[in-house]
Image (cartoon, rainbow, N blue to C red):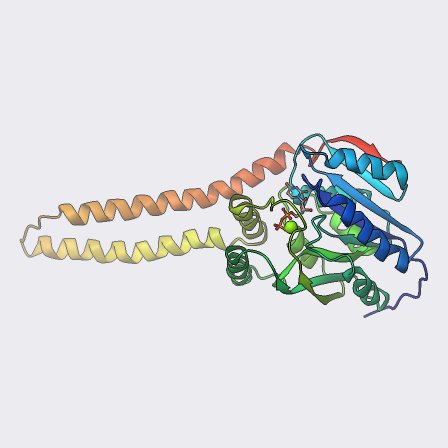
Length: 316
Ligand code: UDP
Ligand code: MG
């Protein structure tokens, strides 16, 4: 049930992961602070410097010096976007917490609509892309991926929704209980439940620089989404075993029948085909199992998800 909130000055936290965003930080800061100061007196913008090699950190340190609402967590190296967001969740103090990209593809102005939805009582407010100005390949692969994922995963992850969203404090606390090392945050924010709503927005082009999610990283994220939310691939192994059992039984029957009738068959081609198809299937199934084992291994090692080298304007 929705419980509306009448809070005048809610504390809003912004989680802004930044990896080599020197050309975007200032503009992002200006636009975001303008929106926030029109909504509340209480806010913080937490930048996570994810091991940038350009001047991102220099700019952030200067900003944090001038404006104490700017907070910075700087990683010791690049740990990846999902981990950067997690560090933000660990440090955000807000009643409402927004996850947003620093390249201005997610327009900060949408935060006003999110806050309206939050006041109505929604606890996870997802921004859904009405349009996007990404490359044709990115749009196409994203479309295929989300549809495929929802076929595989019983937990219905909303389509055309990225990481841009507002989370109520309750949802943030719930997410922080999740100790998964390989994480697909947009799946987890759906998995935790709570009252969910959607605001529509037009996704802009990146202000400057180029994407840090090349095809390789997109595939990696897609695999994490599948393997952390679905055991279907493991069941696929059983399905394949069953199919080959049926085919195998047919081949055995045929071979015996031919032998019984006293005919000899040349047999080389059929041998090669049988051997190849069986061993390829076995390797494929082993590959699937290794994906799960690799993830279990990482989880059991229990290394910290990220290492912080510097922290500015946050006291612990
Ligand atoms: N990002 C990050 N670490 C990474 C890659 C990206 O913190 O290893 C940040 C990046 O600075 C941006 C956001 O995550 O604020 C989204 O990345 P990007 O814009 O490159 O991805 P795209 O929007 O193209 O999917
Ligand atoms: Mg982007």
